[in-house]
Image (cartoon, rainbow, N blue to C red):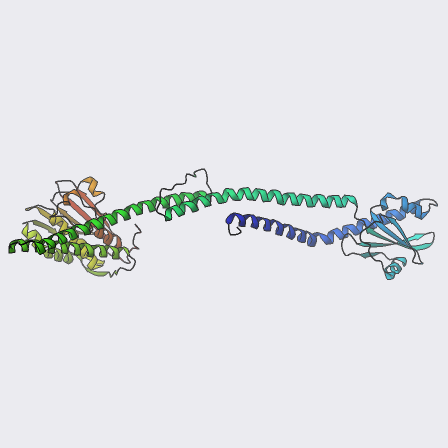
Length: 461
């Protein structure tokens, strides 16, 4: 029970109040005790002087009767000693603590000296010399704890107890007000741990830290819900992409084993198996590549090299594609230097140029333009292909997303190529944009800094 935040809050409050009261009493005692004792001595001296001066102003009044009837003596326990050491008591004699007066103290006062002996306010003693009809007397005054003092002390004690009880009730109510939202968020966290992200806290009325925490908690639940949906889509897409070639491989392998066929049919089936196996290999390679790019440990080795030469090398490597389709190439590649990871950017140009070549019909045109600037370099890769719809453009860089133009088996890919391109460009502090209209071609614009420097931390998406 003590482990709960609510119980700790109440206990901490009680401990703080009790400690505060103790410290307050100690400080008051240290600061005011000397002043109070000095004031008490002055008051008691004035009382003693008044008693003696008033008696001296009376005519032939018996001292014993006088002291017994003086109301001024009532708040004090008064002892009077004659020269022989005989003691007479006056005032409030029913005191709880009687301060012991030594013969030496009596003798000192009888000699005409005042005496002040203090240990605390209740048992402080004032010795005052008295002359009555030529005889010396020693009068000692001690404060008596009267009923009003006890009543005041009881009132203070009751007030402090009431303050402690009322404060405890208040902190218990306030503690529930503070702890209850935390308990709700704890339950919500347990639901999230089980995969339920449909959580929201509409606490706009709370403008304190708990309100901010609840708002952040709601936003976190929304982000996790979106991430979970993306994860499920990713798993579904991966399963579909893997299952399709595996089904083809298994099916045609079974046909090869069970069916008598001509060499031509056998060769055709083997080519399909080889194509699907290569497709599966490319999918696996792209998945590993994307996972590596999103990690913090992917190698990143920027070097300064000629970007125009790299683009020419990629175009030469894709010659079998554009020459077979009799495509026209429009190249504008002025000399330009860039500091970047050459291997990663080579994959960017290979993916973008291959896509343009793939989706441009025979006799079409592919344009590659290099536009160097002072601190930025742009590469535009355009084609006269079938284009991309506006709806597809918004999602073209998502993993496994394929625009309708790529749904047929002949041109289909894994849907990871542009996701890898986007990740590499992001790691180089660059941007990539797409501009396209169906039937009018597509233009990809990659903008990179001339000096890439240190790589970005991977996005946690």
